[in-house]
Image (cartoon, rainbow, N blue to C red; front, side, top):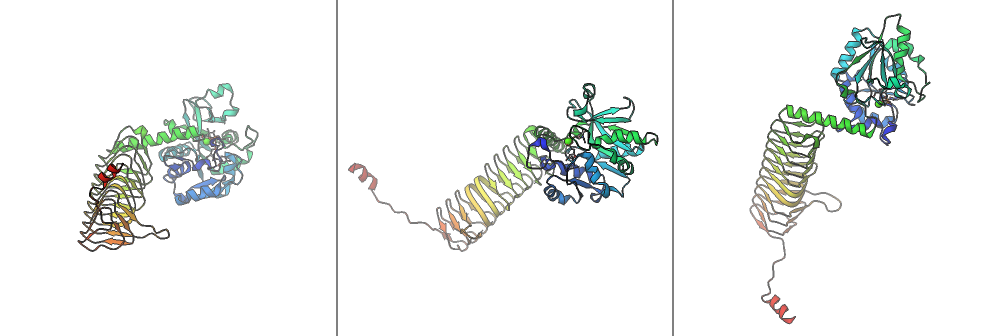
Amino acid sequence: MAAGKGTRLKSQLPKVLHEVGGKPLLEHVIRAAVRVVPAEDVYAIIGHEAERVRAAMAHTGVNFVLQEEQRGTGHALMVAGEALAGYDHVIVLSGDAPLITPETIGRLLNFHLEEQAAMTLLSADLENPTGYGRVLRKSSRSAEVLAIVEEKAASAAQKKIREINSGFYVFDVKELYGNIGKLSTANAHHEYYLTDMAGVLRKALRKARRPVVAWKTANAAEVLGGNTRAELSEIDEKMRLAKCRQLMADGVTVFYPATCVIDADVEIAPDTVIEPYVQLLGKTRIGTASRVRSYSVIRDSEIGDGVVVRPGCVMEEARIGTGAVIGPFSHLRPGSDVGEGAHVGNFVETKKIKLGKGSKANHLTYLGDAEIGAGVNIGAGTITCNYDGVNKHKTVIEDGVFIGSDSTLVAPVRVGKGAYVGAASCITEDVPEDALAVGRARQIVKEGWAREKRRKK
Ligand code: UD1
Ligand code: CA
C-alpha cells in the first residue's frame, strides 16, 4: 500500500518517496517483498502523485495498481481485487514501514498457513504505542484476534494496550474479497479501514474455523512507520547505525558511527577506516586498508585499496586507484579517474580527467577534460582552459611532463612526453616531446628604480 499522501509530513513529495537510509521508504519495502516473492507477483498500490511514484519505482520491476481516490487502507485493497484474483493468499505490506525484513514476512506467511487463518496480522509490543492500531486478543494466551481498534477510536483502557498492529498482514484472498464489501466508513476519518477486516472476518468465519490471528515479532523496531519527519529521522538513524554495525562486523573500522551517513548499497572491504563525520553515498565502493578522514562526502565513487582520502573531500562518480592520496579539500567531479599512487591535493578541482600512475596535482588547480599520463607533475595553480564559451576541448599531457606553477593550458592542446612548461606560462600551442615551452612576458629589470622613487619623495 503506497497510495497515501502522507499529510503529517507536510510535504510536496508523496510520503513513500521520502528517503531513509538513502532510499525512498517504498523502495525498502519493495526490496524486502521481492526477496519473498518474485517481482512479477508484487503489486504496488499507488495513488497520490502516482506517476511520480511509478517512475521512481519502475526499476524494481514490480506491478502497479492505481487507487485513484485514496479512501483508506481497506479501499486500497478493494481496488487491488482484480489484480489479486488469481492468487490464494496475499501478503499486505505498508509502503511507509521500511525496516521490515524478508525473514519476518516469511515467518508471518508461514504462521498464517499453519493456522489456516483467514487473516494474520503482524503485531509488536511498543514502549510507546501512541498512534498505532491496538490488537484486541481473545485472551492473552490465544493467537486469535477479536478486532483491531484504531488510536482515535480506542477507549482509555484500550490505549493502554501496548501490542500494536504493524500494518503488515496475510489474507486468504477468497475470504478477503468475499467479505471486503462489509467494510464501512463509519469512523473518525470516514475511510475504509483494512484493520476492520479483523472484526469482519472473525464474525463471518467463526463457524468455518478460519480464525483471525496475530503473530508478534520480537523485533519491534522493524515495524516502525515513517508518518512524521521525526519518525523518518528515527528510522534513518536506526538504518544508518545498522549499516555501520554490519560494516564493523565485516572488518571495517567506523569511528563514532553515530556521525557517519553510509547508504545501504555502499561496499567497503576489511581494514578500511572511516573517520567521524563522513558521508558515503549511493553505490560507493572502497577497497581494503584505505582510510577516509573526517568531513568527506563521497557519492557513487570507486576507491581502491590503500587509498587515503584526507579531510574535507567531495567526490562524485570518481575512480581512485590503489595507493592514491586525495585531499585535504579536493573536489573530484564526475569522470575523474585518478591512477595508482597519484596525488590530488589542496583545493584541486577535477572533472572528466584521467590522471596517470604516480602523477601529482597537489595545490590550487583546475583540471577538466584532460588526459594526463604517468609521472606528471602539475604545478600549483595550473588551469586547463577547457571551455571556450561554446564547446569543451581536451588537454593532453603525456607521460613525465612537468607543468610549472601558475600555468594555463588553453585547450585543445597537447604537451608531449617529457616536456617542460615554464612557470606562469600561457600555453596555446602544442609542445613537442622533451621541449621547454615558456609562454610569458620576459622580465624587465630597471636598476636603481626604487631607490630613485624614494629619493624624489
Ligand atoms: C495503519 C493502520 C494502523 C497501524 C499502522 C501501522 C489502518 C486504518 N490503520 O495506520 O492500525 O497501526 O498502519 O503503521 O490501516 N494507503 C493507501 N491508500 C489509502 C490510504 C493509505 O495506499 O487510501 C497506504 C499509505 O500510503 C501507507 C499505508 O497505506 O503506506 C498505511 O497508511 P497510513 O495512513 O500510514 O496508516 P496509519 O495511520 O499509519
Ligand atoms: Ca503509517
